[in-house]
Amino acid sequence: MDRAIAFASRTIGGVPLLLALPSTGDAPHPMVLWFHGFGVDKEVHRKELEQLARAGFLAVGVDAAGHGARRLPDLDARQAAPHEEALRTMIGLAAQTADEVPSIVRALADEGLADAERVGIVGVSMGGYVVYRAVLVEPSIRAAVAILGSPEWPEGDSPHRHLDGFRHPALLSITAERDKNVPPAAARELHRRLAALDPEPVHSYVELAGAVHLMSEQHWTQAMVETLRWLKRHLRLTS
Image (tube, rainbow, N blue to C red; front, top):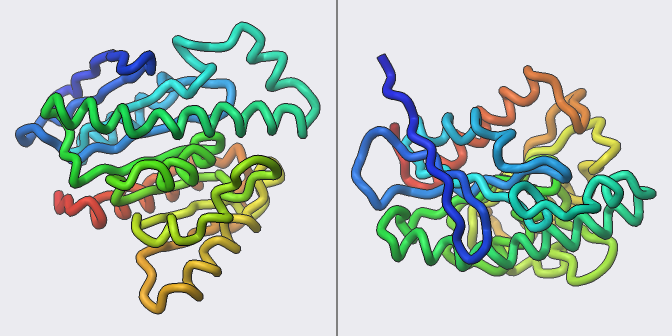
């Protein structure tokens, strides 16, 4: 019978975390930071954190800026605002969240829990936006998976303008063909440019045929299979 995965709540630098600890292997562990979507929190991804922990990763769910234990009092109203206004709010919070990644990585590595040489990051929807910025600000990230996110931001310092910053980490982008919330074109174009830049790029783009933003269980299962395969491969985890 499989051993239960132990969860632990932590706060690092004011950032609330939910750690899922691997039941096998000694620390430091390869680590994967997981970022949720707009308006929810780290708790909605306990199942995914458990999957990662069972695969041998230290899985770290992160409450994004303005969410979860540090939720903005008017977040619901901001989310319900007209699209362009809500998008500005989301991107601002995603950028703030991404800028917190280096301190989280350093703290968990200094504590001996995380292997600083094997750091991964995954984000869904708003979390995908976080991923595209985080790989530009945290050089220790070896593997990144952006699910239903966009590297092209309508204002501010858009990640897609920093193409060289995407050449080092192994980046997997997973989009939904029929996504009206976050159309796949921007992520697809980023990977086209990366492929043109590097003859043998360590990047991959997966567009789920027929999928929408709030994807079906079947499409989500496919996305998780791709995510786990990518993380295991590029963080040198063979189990």
